[in-house]
Image: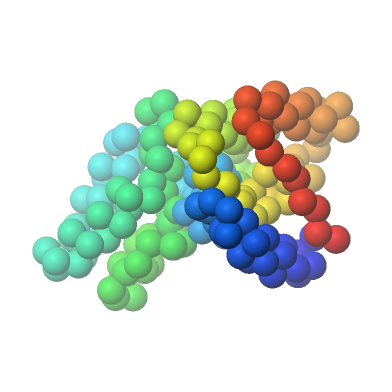
Length: 185
């Protein structure tokens, strides 16, 4: 649930784990390689058009910095580019508005089909696991349980069985690595 202390708990857990090994902490919504919350999903053409539009309202220097931030934090899934549009640094109100326009391409708002949403979430999880480094600990605040559950229950009329099947697929993927769920209520 919102405001129950997920961030507080996650930060404390990070502090305890850091004594033993490197910890990568993905705060809720922030450049998270699995979550779909506040992530725009664009085709290659949409991505090129977006960069062209952004370029038209930037100085050379600001465009280079914004483009680098976008490339460093975006992921490619199949032929789609996933951009954490809320967390890209901008240097003018016009640039911020351009990035905020990507809200229309967010998958975590019920505009996409349920199966497309689940498929993209699973593909992002698979992509992360391809890059997973076992010598590190990863903390995903809200990304696996909280955010998808809220989105699915809030936007889709699915049966309990469909929801359970989605999480069984996630569990199957995660079974390839050592993991723990910490639930804060």
